[in-house]
Length: 448
Image (cartoon, rainbow, N blue to C red; front, top):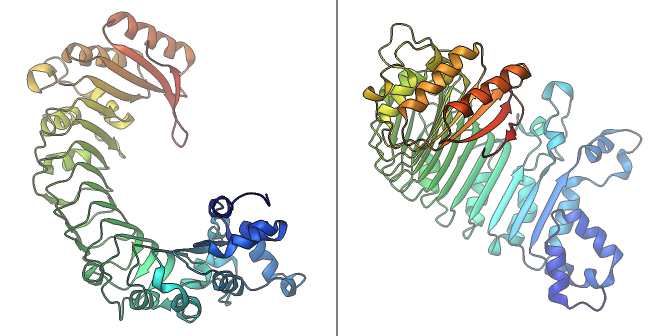
């Protein structure tokens, strides 16, 4: 180790994901210790064990406060470009009701604490990640966003988790391109300050952000957006002319408005039906729709002739009684040129019980469909086979079919289903697997 060149030693230390491991290496090796000050990042996370020891009367006196450890580590570095500070995942599972914790050693978005280290390293900072301990942070409102915006002019990435964030005094950060707010109480109910303060964002992640009323994302340069809405705002609007990838999960807004003409991939999950208003998606290639009211969602969805890959997930059984079209027909009507289609179990079950399978090919365009993935429960093997055969006969261009059979289906039924399908249609390349709620799918055979 002592004979290795300094750049290689620095590369070794730089690959360690925890600054505590770096500290151990410094003690073990004089050579590593000699280059440790040149590391340009700090990664420090509090473990559940450390937290428990800091609270126990027997061990509390032997544990150095977490914030003190962090400040010492960061003060020893010449240049700091990336800071990651937080609590490990097991500690995040500690519920507020399970402990009485009025300490603030893990209130990491605390402005007083941040002032101790941020001014010393802000000049070269490119990335900051702060993951608070919710038990200590949920009832403490913090102005850390304002502090970061005033010091970090060159910051490119910012991530804050498990905190109550104020936007008072927040100033524009023109170089910030990536923003992640996760499990946040945000005092910006319409996202006006987010839009004004981060005008050049390209990647926005809002996961479980509460406190929103009529949020509107209006960002001209945004390319990727992952938004999981934790409460039920009155309306949700996304206006992003450069957006190409959108994942949106929401409950039941009165209005959902999307204007993203360059959108290429859309993953939309809505708990129930809502007033959907979207401009035409002329570049959309991949579409994932999930809803307890999938039929109504499809009726409101714009015609999308460019979609090639389509996945439909129904979270609630929708009876096809007294309807003119099955959900499958609605899918193919909205996306007539789809080539790869995935139908989850409730969508397939609705299709099985639909009475108008006979002349399916005459009602919808299916010639371009060459790959289908279906999740089956097989309540009646005769009905299931009849549905599969009808679909095969209607899709002359179909070349690949992947079928996942529920694990609770008895083995002889599964075997009979596989044998009958393969005998009926030899032109198709069959793939067989098994599925069950809450578990990962497994393949039985691949490419027969």
